[in-house]
Image 1 (cartoon, rainbow, N blue to C red):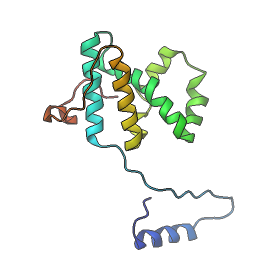
Image 2 (cartoon, rainbow, N blue to C red):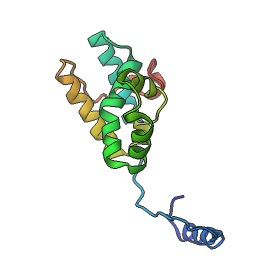
Image 3 (cartoon, rainbow, N blue to C red):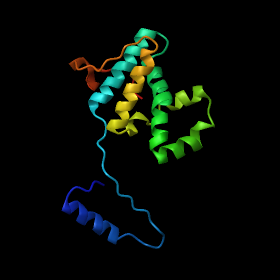
Length: 154
């Protein structure tokens, strides 16, 4: 629940005043950080397609899953305690690399990132593939809108 106005504050206080106190509860309040933009999502999808076309080694979906695993997971593990606990308990030491790639088709990684995290993720993707000869740029063309992208939804 977002707290922006005095009405929001009153609603939260009312909600808290009605909580059953038979067991201890945890209440967390933190600053709201804007989620990533559609433009960041579109850029990622453009890049997955470009990498796939230029390297001819993987489908766009396979590129996306590899980026999520090798770049996105480390970012979230470092900055999101809940994600780290879940990933370490369920995936980290329990699955092969190939199985982890398969899990990336279904596990939210980049969708959990803030704007800043997704920016770092995209910059790391850019640097990683530049070392392999793929120059990824930040597009501004209408063709890069999410509704015009195909082949990488997971």
